[in-house]
Image 1 (cartoon, rainbow, N blue to C red):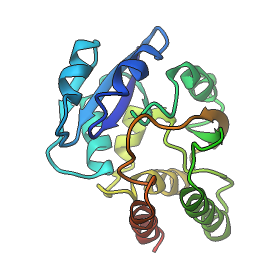
Image 2 (image 1 turned 120 degrees about the vertical axis):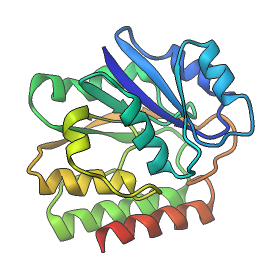
Image 3 (image 1 turned 45 degrees about the horizontal axis):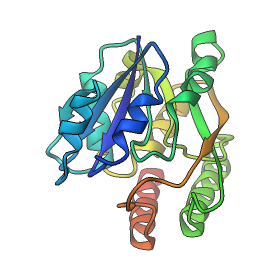
Length: 213
């Protein structure tokens, strides 16, 4: 069994499709991070383990899911319908084969899926990782896989939007092999609360720059 951690904030409309897309052998752990809609109820009705995390923040939700997980291998994936669980085998493959300790899904976006400001911010951060630390990544993708115990041992501290970047930086410092695989990226379902807006993208980049600093 592989646990899939799905941080969620008002994603009731997307959750059924996301959970249905998970292949056999993957268990959905939906972390409700303060939703005002029926996110938790819908997730539970569709068979997910539901965790409530009152402290707002992407990193807070991801960490709560990591603590709740029991599988040796865990994945992280956005719960907005932009990613399909059908691609999880592609992401976990290098990890399970022993070729990498952290696998990132590099987004291959369809038209309209990835706003220009969000894509540009992501590219700048990836470039800074290559320039400052020599980490050869092109995308700080929201679909990723690693071993739960090893992730906990990294002692990730960020509880906001710096979490994905901190994971990559700490993994690199620990000597992990980091690999990327391409995954399709489609327009999300519903309204974006983060990188779909310029303000959200600026906030995310600011949090990630703080990690690099």
